[in-house]
Amino acid sequence: MQRAVARNVIGLIIIAFGVIALLNNFGLTRISLANIFHLLWPLLLIGAGITFILHRDLPGIITGAVLICLGVIFFGRNAGLFDLNITYYFWRAFWPVILILIGVNILFKGGHHTSGNLAIMGSVEKTKEVWELTSAEYTAVMGSIDLDVRKARFAEREVSLTLNAIMGGINVILPEDVAVTCKGTAILGGVEIMGKSSGGIWGNINTQSGDPQAASHIIHLDCTSIMGGIEIKK
Image 1 (cartoon, rainbow, N blue to C red):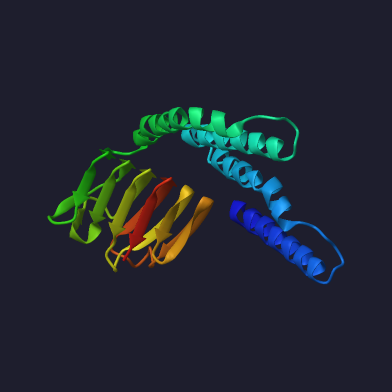
Image 2: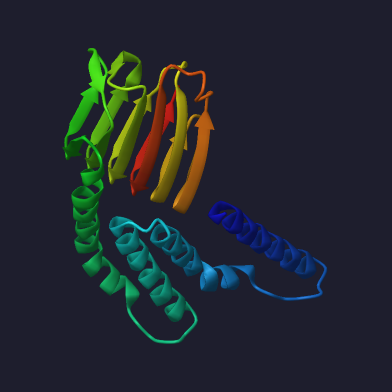
């Protein structure tokens, strides 16, 4: 439902920009598309924040609240509602806010899984030897994580993995014979899942592969990229 609403809104915005451009080209209107974009782009931050809040978990609510506040501030400045040196305050608050979001994600998301793997300004590699795959959370903070699931021994038929890339990168290679469900969110970063990608200021992607009924194993992936990158491929 959320994806359908977001798709419809984006479609209507694109149609509106096309109609304005067409009217401008025929001299019927003189509306500056650049000015409209400059005014309205903060609404993308607000929309992303609402999406996070609808997840109804504490990390999502906090992240959503921060994005909505930023969107309101930038929109108010662009609309001339108040005069504020946003650049100055943004960079003073930027790193502390990122650290807060990292801490909240580590504290609260990790509690839902049986084990965790964290790479802070370092790396986690499971690509060369046989390793045991269980439901877990992998978080890369200014670091990298590489997982080759083809070499993994599944502890259970169905496994859930949460992948968080915060100014870092995560790469996962999956076997061909597993069924996969995956959802990904990117904020000022990118997520590429089995050939489908999303990114930019904010992006969202959901996909699946294989037959869960017939497959020998099932993997559920929940990916979040904040100024980082996540790549999932078979």
